[in-house]
Length: 317
Length: 194
Figure 1: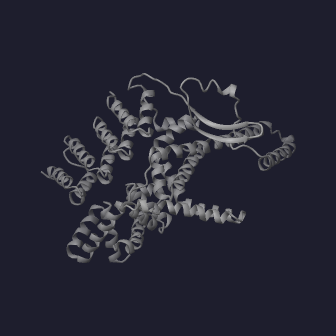
Figure 2: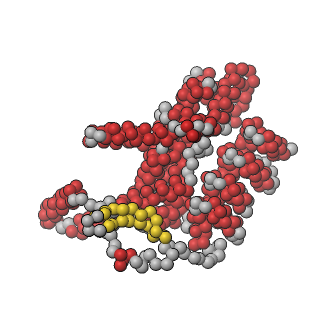
Figure 3: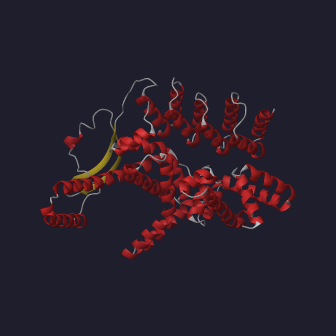
C-alpha cells in the first residue's frame, strides 16, 4: 500500500472511530501539514453525510411478522422431514441383524423407490397436515377465538367440497406479578413484537416497576432502545434502563444511540445518562470519550455539541 | 425469571419447539435488519432470514456451547448473505434451463425488485432518491465489501465484531471497508460530484 493510500484508509477509519490511539496521533499530525488530506477529509465527510441521508429499510412489526410466519411454515416442513428420517433411522438400527442385512437392504431400496415415486407422481395438497372435519374443529372455535390468515387449498365447485387452512387466535386474560417469569416473558414478547406502540409503552412501564434486575428485561429494553421504530418507545426504554446498574451492554446501547439515533432528544438523554453513571468511577472509558469527542465536533445539533464538550471537559478537570 | 439463552438452547436441542421460537424471537429483528439492508428487496430479506434460521435449526443439535450463540448466529447470517446472490443466480440459471419460460419470469422478478427501489413520480422525495442511488452503488460492490459496509455504516457494528462474524481478521475487514467505500464513492461521484 503506498503512503497516499494509507492516509486515505486512515482518514476513512477515523470517520468510523476505528483508529488506534497511535494511528490517530499520526493522522492528526499529518493533517496539520497536508492540505490535500484535509481536503480529502472534507470530501469524505460529505460522502458520509450523503450516505447517512439514505434511510435504512424499515423492519416494522408487520414485516417481521410476515417473515416469522414464513419461517414457521418452513420449520414445520423441516420438522416433518426430520421426523420421517429419524423414524427410518431408528427402524434400521433396531432391525439390522447381520444375516438379514441383504434382505433388509433390498426392502429398504424398494420402499425408498415407492416413496420417491409417490412424491413425484401423486398430486397432493400444499398443506401436509391432514384436514380436520367441521365437528373436530368446532371446539377450537368457541369463545373469542379470532380467525386469521385463511389459505384456500382445494376447492371443488361441482361437489361443494372445500379445504382450507387458517390460524385460530384465542384471547387470554391473565393476572400475575411483574416478578413472575411468565409475566415477564409476555411483557418482553409484547415489547419486541406488538404492532401497537401503546402496548409496547405499557410493557416498558410495567417492566420499569419490577423489583429485581432481570437480564432478559434489560436485553429487551436494550433491543427496544436500539431498534423500535417509535421514538417515544425508544425514549421510555432509555428511561427504564436508568433503573439498571450501568454495564457494558447498556453502555454500548447508549453509544449506539449517540452514533445512530436521529432524534436529538434521545441523543441528549444518552449523554446525560452516561454522564450521571460516571460520577462513581470519575473518568469515561476510552470508547465513550471517542464518541463524545466526535459528537463535540460533528453532531448537527448545536446543544449536543456543547453538551458533549461539557461532559468531556468536566472529566479533564 | 425468564430462561436465559443457554437454557433455551438446551431445551431446543431436546426438541422443544417453543424454546426454539423464543430463541429466534430474541434475535430475529437484528437478523432481518441485516438481511433487509443487504438484500435488494423485501423478498430477498425474508429469504435470507428464513435460510439463516433454518440453518440454525438444523445445526442446533450439534452446537457445542463453546462459543456465544450470537457469534454463531451472526456467522451464519453473514455466510447466508455472502452466498445468497450467487445461489440465487444459480437457481435462476436452473430455472431457465428447465423451463423455457423461466428466464422471462426471472427477468420479470428482477424488474419488480428494481421497480421497488426506483422512486415513483409520487415518491420522488430526496431521501428516496438518495436511497435509490446508494442501493445502486451498494450493488456494484462484492458481497464481502457490501456486507462489511452495511454492517459498519448502517448497522453500527464495530470492525472487530464484524471480523468475528465473518471469521476473518480485522485487517481484512478494514480492507473490505476501505475498498468498498472507494467504489461507493466512484459510483456516487456522477450523481453527487464527491
